Image (cartoon, rainbow, N blue to C red; front, side):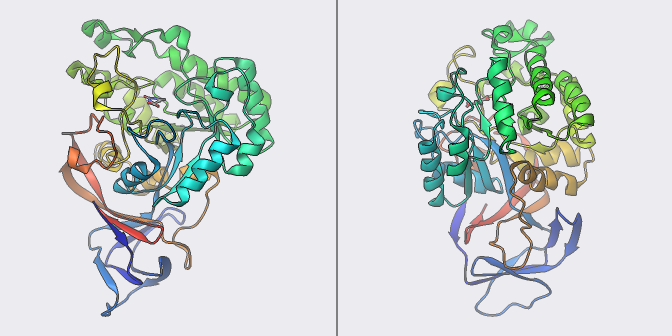
Length: 429
Ligand code: DOR
């Protein structure tokens, strides 16, 4: 990936502008000046401008990821805010919310301030999600109000569930004061035990320890009930099972404070793929069956699921080379996201391209309250330029992350991010 400062004037020539707010796709050139949107329309090149040929390409809002792990502070050998930013740019993401399961966890106003300050030096916009409980230990709420003042955008103990229902109730109730999302990693650890995959025919065949879909859906059901009780805002992360979707669908009929996301890997893979014994497919919650996968696709189409979030979770090769029981949960996902979801949703399941772009741009932004119109004249350019039809194979060379734990390596992709523009810089992918 080539990364450089934008020239004073840039003309994006001959592309289609996909506006996810107006719901339109129009042919138009776009001029940037000093890193800002200057004009839309038809423009001839001039000598001093940098001309980018966008024929056949779609220009749209920079993608926004609600769910990534950048491992800073504490595990900078896996990812830093800078290397995570480069992975984001390679995937078309200009704005990323980072989860607090770092070391130490992002559980105090001071660590929130640290992430906010450090992110100023990074080439994308990074927003910290604060921990719900101190030390992510599940016992005592963090100082949510002060953490919000320092720049937290939501709260989660992601990687771990909030098991104690009274604590979860208090978090949701406290959240109503600030109208911010509470994001609970829904997995009942008592039911999960030492499971490494979904419980079903494939786990029986492979002889690997497994846990049923209820491990997730029971806790999703509890969280939805507590949301009703408190009037809080609940965002359900990485939904993986059809049973959870049933609960979310019912809850959404009467409660507009519930939102939910799905990962590219839960859309792309099924538990059958674990037959290759690739530990990169060991994730929490686990990859489930073909029928869960179909239910997730349907739920995106009918609005039960709001958006796509990567759950980019870098781990070292040494850790992932261990056996299935020892390898940590997680896979990276920023660089492979668009090619994977565009293939599954647009090519294979006839989702409208506009809808998919909304799931990566305006919808996650709305959940977090980042509501800028990125195509307005005068705004800082935060744009992603894609070839919606390029067929390619994802390889190690496409990875900018410090870690390589991706089961997408070697997979056919459809649609590719070509350029990402953010903070007066351009990444050519
Ligand atoms: O697979 C996962 N890995 N799921 C999570 O929720 C946490 C993540 C991690 O931090 O590695």
